Image 1 (cartoon, rainbow, N blue to C red):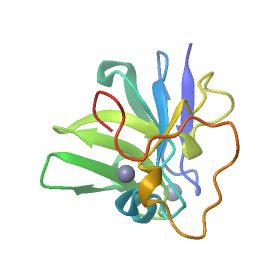
Image 2 (cartoon, rainbow, N blue to C red):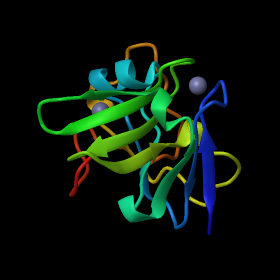
Image 3 (cartoon, rainbow, N blue to C red):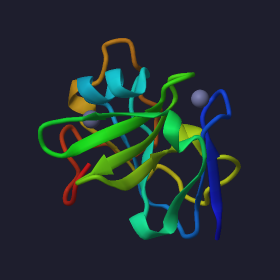
Image 4 (cartoon, helix red, strand yellow):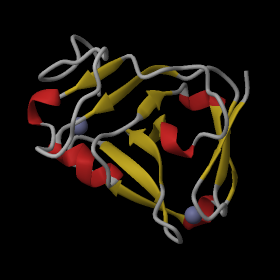
Length: 135
Ligand SMILES: [Zn+2]
Ligand SMILES: [Zn+2]
């Protein structure tokens, strides 16, 4: 399937010519700040299936010391994708258009969630990291 996404102002658009996978939500304090929200909402992509369509020159990157980073729209501030080793690693679900045909399968680092967040019943939660794999 082909999935498209864009930032809040619409200047930056992208397309994924494949499926999203491992959709997850991380509730740690760092993801709360990176996503300006109660948690991340993020799914992995294959880097070779991801293409920026418009506005790539407007992207701003914030890369941490482990090589994992995020890319934002410098105009409106939407967080669009995650980077690992300089390649696109995943996309933020909030910027995906329509139905990406994945659901958030796990909520991780719920042990350090914000005091003000109330977790819904019935979701799969882990106090710390996922059982395996990168965030
Ligand atoms: Zn924007
Ligand atoms: Zn996190």
